[in-house]
Length: 319
Image (cartoon, rainbow, N blue to C red; front, top):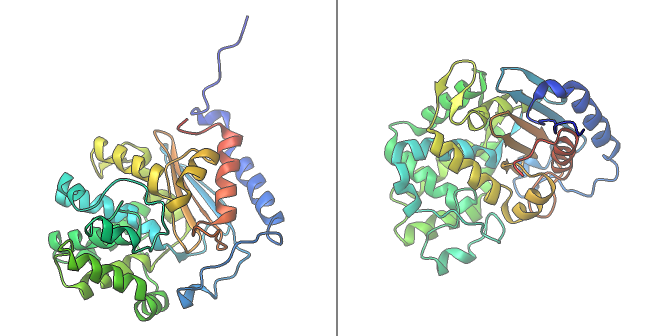
């Protein structure tokens, strides 16, 4: 007689600290052979040490497990686009989708190519052009969108010390020519309503936020909880919106490597060129990895490997 299949979503089956320790050892053994490059198009990011790795898991039961450099803060960069999308959807509703699409771009995250063909409507909210439109929506709906975003990040992460990295912010503001071009190009099509400088300031602010793996794993736990923050029971967003955000993370969250990421990892995720990746196991947990060297798509090479190993060792996947 066959035994019933085990449920991988039953976390009591998994030795999460042991799994994280194994992954940490495997990743560190790959430091020397890693061919990834630390982001250098933002000058202040170029000085981040290569040999860093952190990983944190936050369960819906309120437990947090971490390993390695999980407490070391880093520039969250495009991971912030998950949080700004949440705020924009709650402020503007589904009208947002008239101004930004939900399809993978197939092009680099800072590409201008598709915007002209598609009349200034970015393919999705996770490429830079789409995030600039989301920032514009926040400017139109919040008296002080920077303060609103900062309060949101602090509340979601449980860390009142979350703040802007001044060096990263000023570095991006001085060298972000591609984003400046994107914002002005979108404005020329009428899809940015506020002053371009204000939109760029908000965008550079969100990317320059400094958090660690534990902060970030906690900060997206509401997406694992169907819109509810565990522990407090606070409804952050609706069930439908949390589901939709996870869907866009799955299809667009790792830029033009989303197909490969879905194939190897099988979780909704969002990466940033600071080397971080957040991921969600719906109804179970959220997690964050950090390793600065990136592949040619802008995703953390060893971070993606760590998530691949986690899903294989636990069986936790949306597939």
